[in-house]
Image 1 (cartoon, rainbow, N blue to C red):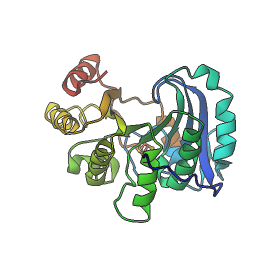
Image 2 (image 1 turned 60 degrees about the vertical axis):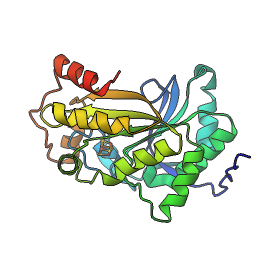
Image 3 (image 1 turned 60 degrees about the horizontal axis):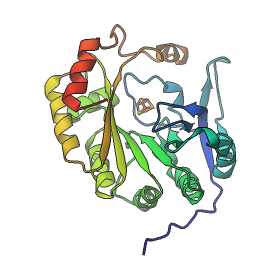
Length: 263
Ligand code: SF4
């Protein structure tokens, strides 16, 4: 008999960065996408550095930090259900960030309640907070039971290059990928393509070899680096490390897609 997941009743408040009611690039179909505050990665190409602080949201128009908006799972699901008729067979809700796993208690409550309503759930994550230590791991195990799809960003397959690019290790992230696969949860792997940093053919082949060890990968996506978020770095007074780096050429994108077997 399938094990039932106990629905958390804590009414945890999620710290929200923003909401996209008709998301079309964050999972299958049309989706209600919730972007959460907080991220411990420091990706040099991040286009949302205003999500980094868990306890603060930067309002670009007002040019100031404020407390992030807080919403409960019930409030968000009530809001999301208004758009259900647009979801079709594939759509549903996606939780993204920032890094959604920094608010794992909230995501667990949200997904558990969503699954009880028959809503497709997708987690967009870099898996940076993943650990097999408690108290995280029990929550992770429960979350994976109510998660239909994980979109996992693998920033770099090489440990040293990953640390240089994101200021964080990738060992636990690759471990998370295997964990998700071993549980039979569907995976989409995403890889941001930055000229001179993540375009090396040997690294891309290593990444593909790693993906081949996973059993549940449905799709691989190459996301070309863009500079649309650089103005936020300036607004926040943070030096932008990729100044002068241009988006990849069509040939670089094509080559990466071929090596990774991507869309
Ligand atoms: S994981 Fe995402 S939100 Fe966090 S720094 Fe990297 S790109 Fe930005």
